[in-house]
Image (cartoon, rainbow, N blue to C red; front, top):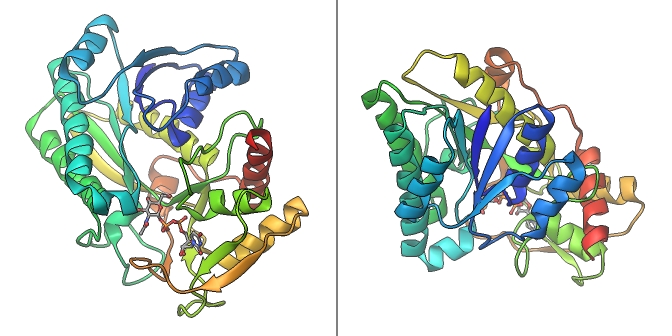
Length: 336
Ligand code: UD1
């Protein structure tokens, strides 16, 4: 299939492009490189032996997007990753987040409907569940009001997609609610490239192990969890990337219009302390850390019930936390 990938040079996007090529599909990348690097495209070629077509530009640029759809005839589906994604920044610049994330999605959706493409896969997030009443979280758990504009854009876009699927008979879509993607490609050639100080646990941890940061701070060890630290469903980015290919194959077979939502997680919760311990053990490297106060807005625990996608689509996460932490370290050493 010929698949358009917005944000295809980003962390999850680049891994998905690799998996698409390896599954025999033809990815077409759209990226404005605002939070990614052009050399990632060369790395994709190095891994797969194929250089994907790339259009550099912004998904909110109507003319640019219309031209891409015009030029690339016979697009079979679209995976929409392109978005601003920093929680803290979204609280400082809400308008920028709403304008960017909503405009880009609307522009892409307008072209999809104009060309009667359907097969739209949206990068949603477990953030839409807020602080869950219980774990693991099934898709039928209620969404909760987002605590930040970034999270709110995910929720609003899910609603836009649902409404479009009930109005447009040619449209079909899936929202994939990602839990916590970590790791890197096992080649060590592509991975996460945080700008400035990383907000997320694993990039901060690998940078500390590499000596770029003095120490890691565990944000709170007094949560009601087995060891007091936060618990999350960390999923290897390659498993997550493969979920998109399985999702597209499934979506293609559904009668239009169609819309559904799937959790993408392992089904297992792992604590911050367990992540540090596993990292040290698998990579034989010490990570200096201290216990600090809780980070505002954090929740105690959140992990997925992935049984819906396991049963209906037949995808499940195969890699371990140790695999992800080994790959993340290999990648960090390559870029340090
Ligand atoms: C965050 C976002 C989520 C987004 C996801 C992307 C929030 C509230 N949620 O999830 O919307 O989709 O990133 O991956 O920001 N931790 C430390 N020390 C650190 C960094 C993190 O102890 O230096 C802890 C956190 O307190 C948390 C766990 O590690 O318990 C995971 O944090 P993080 O990687 O930032 O992800 P989330 O906050 O779960």
